[in-house]
Image 1: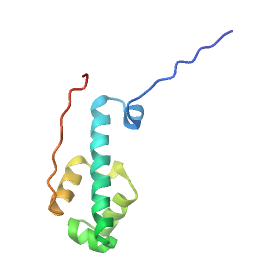
Image 2: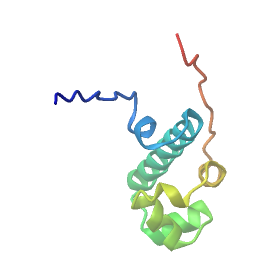
Image 3: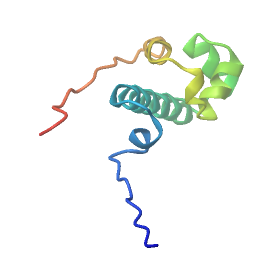
Length: 98
């Protein structure tokens, strides 16, 4: 018996792990925002406690963010954290099929 396996290819890791393109897009946006917030914290040399005060969240919430626990953050929550840092969040929309 000869078996052929078809390997799926994905544009992003989120496309591979999410059930729908909508979920993958949401996850990618959350990951991008989390990484940006993390960079702001690192660049400013803030402790988790200082970052929590600046971001108007608790220190355990900052710890979750720095541990990349994406499942604990909604897109809304991350936009609010960014706004607390004086950041403006904007998205660039591109056609899905160019």
